[in-house]
Image (tube, rainbow, N blue to C red; front, side, top):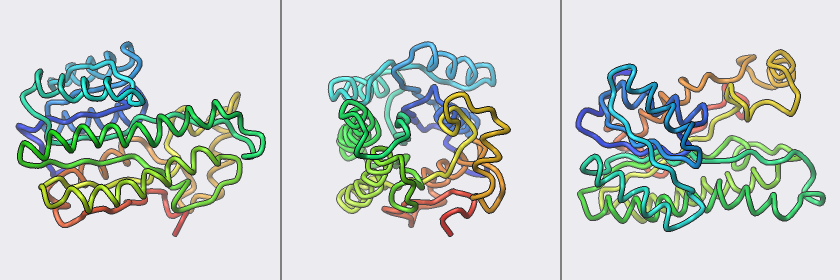
Length: 253
């Protein structure tokens, strides 16, 4: 990456998952100080250890993005520890059980929508308030190619939540840009990690199932998606506002 974030403070939610971790590491390698947040203190602590092992600066914050008080504390702690908040990557999310809408338990619907959509709303709400008062910043939200760009029966709750992230991003981007807060989203296709596997499925079985519908014939490495996040968060994409950037190996082309 040619983009740099020296002197910038970056907040990454969902930082114990494969994409959050890869992106936190990428920001640290580009010179940022990184606050890594998530519900799993062991997982976020491991991300901090990996950043520190490469000479970077990071700290972990335990927070649940579905709880407004947790999100407010997450933003405040980032600012208190590191002196500001310039970039946020709202990436926390959960997988949904596979099955038709008519058979979807209501608890599963609530869990998926609360984390994948309401969590982004609450994160932006508190991040924008800080950035608006301190000269602006950039925000990138994780949507998904499943939702606004592709239809996949069996993942109704996940698709609805992620399509909501795309729509919410566009609305918030128009509202916040006058205050110097630039907001965009990414919509990744399948990423190499636990969420791309079905229960009991091997990597080889996953690749055979997915490869045929992906023009590149493979799922994405987390680092490939992370590079797009850094570009959207940088001044190199300074004229990009309210975009939902699809990164799916051509599947929705």
